Image (tube, rainbow, N blue to C red):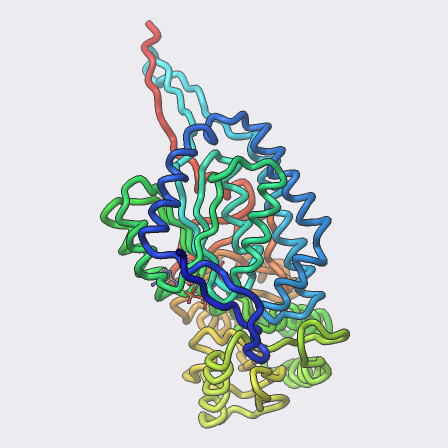
Length: 458
Ligand code: NAD
């Protein structure tokens, strides 16, 4: 009989449910099923695949409250934020329901004449998805939507802390008419072992991972023997640049979103605030007032803005980053002291460039502020990181905007906005933030191979 493991409430460790703790052997049986279903799913008419995705979008949207409750309970985020995640996550199903019918090849006359060069797009085949705990629904639908649209079968392994949402999504897909075995949820506590067994099987053709850079590197190595196709959505260290010509009130509004969405537990979270020295005092005071006014508490309570962090380990690591910054001369403007797994919104000013809090991914509600004088200084500081996921830029100068968009080494740049995530846009990073894009027109390409056909045409 399959063993199970408990899913825990991040506030007090209460047991919320149990999920199967699959062994490597059981996961390989799931892969057998995905392989068996691959051909029939790939040859299901695109419109039919699209309509199943569309129905899934509608069902998730209709059950927004139910999904939000599960997300909030297992992950801790406030209900309003969880509803936001449901809307965002569902949109990937709608977007790719529309993309399923637009997969197309091409036809070219060879430059020298005499033959025709055709390209045909085909699904890459059975996929493995590994997702993190911070967006239990959306990190799954960003992969499942394009994969199903392209005609791929998939196994999805959610984070052990937050697997309940994924089981709910699988129920929705069954109700939407997805044939059994096309999408299977694989939960396990022996993640490394199960993943290695799956990657060692050449019938698995693709792995798409969202999570930390360290694990991502291991998975890329693990995919080498069978040369599976790989998409990696990894960590970030987003700079948030505020120039003296910016609308400071708008920049503070944007900062609240870029920093506090998901309690700072987002790969796109503003991790370093780089503010022109002339406006730093005003920006810091306004941001601290807004941060200090947020209500911290259980995600399911009314009026709560900030829930608990995912576990005690996360609290400790955020606390260490704050302590290191303060020891290095930073000024604690607001927040700083955790209460159980609740970490208060925190603002640090005068943060030194060597402080760990600006070099590492914080993954918590802490805003470290440093200043700059020249545009070049700002760009150099922004690019001074191994990561390259998202950057935010606040200025009313169009020339400066164009210069910065071209010189910032990031996969996504938000200009006068604190939110870049959008299902219709290509989400993804460069450098240690990984490769591959999710969403937009690019998203489905990650799940398609190109076959080229040369035809003699005398
Ligand atoms: P994590 O890397 O610890 O875990 C992510 C997933 O990988 C989980 O399902 C986990 O069970 C699994 N995993 C852990 N060890 C594994 C191994 N050896 N082999 C295979 N799978 C393994 O990350 P996390 O703490 O869950 O999530 C936070 C990280 O995710 C942050 O670094 C964040 O920036 C990143 N993230 C990136 C994006 C993006 O789109 N770029 C989005 C969200 C989160």
